Image (cartoon, rainbow, N blue to C red):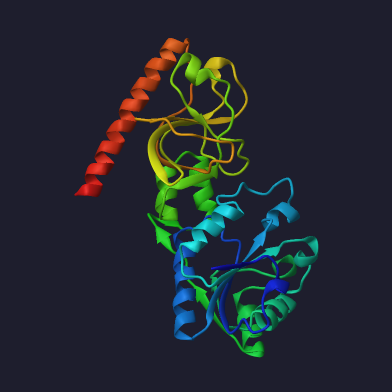
Length: 316
């Protein structure tokens, strides 16, 4: 999969293409279905399958103090997209100038002139152009004029919910990580690096791995059954998300205790993926470190039971 950081990087003879445009935050099940349709149609039409996305997320420019946290920051999004069969991803730098581009100009200059689109696939509620003036009806109108076909995809339902980035985000923020997994088609995860903790784990309770500061979407404060992937090796773990109130802290931290951990070298740039599987309980303040230790023991037992059941089901 090629990644183009601007339209200028795209070769003149790159087309024809089957294209989809969107933020694609989360790469959830509905996104995956649509992208798979793009890839399938590209093969049928002897064209390239291309996804156009934006960085930063448009809300960071249009609502700089009110945009939602990202489910998948750009590098995580690209990792997930590489697992699909796209030929290329175009990452457009979203600026005020781009936000002012009229809908027809976007269709003509980007979809037609630059990408030589023969077919464009979008979700049913797709909007584009200045002040979101373009919708699916207008895109069809532009496609008829410029010479590309438009395919609208219906909403995907899972468990009575429309699969959408907003529903994934709400589930994660509410600590409902199993609902998020159902909508994403995989566990909600964070890609980060090791961070420096306060040493409470090794001094008072159990050794832990702290994640570096992370400013995007995280689950609500609480204790979770998790799986930590370090250098392609997976470790069963229990993770606390919150402020460590037992120690009088008010700074946010993500701290994981790895079950059956064996020594592994961690540097500041070691890539870590932390996947959230199940919520055990809310974060709480304990009267003593001994009481916290006992609760951690119980949390670990519950996590071990979770993994025993999961692993036996996977073997069945």
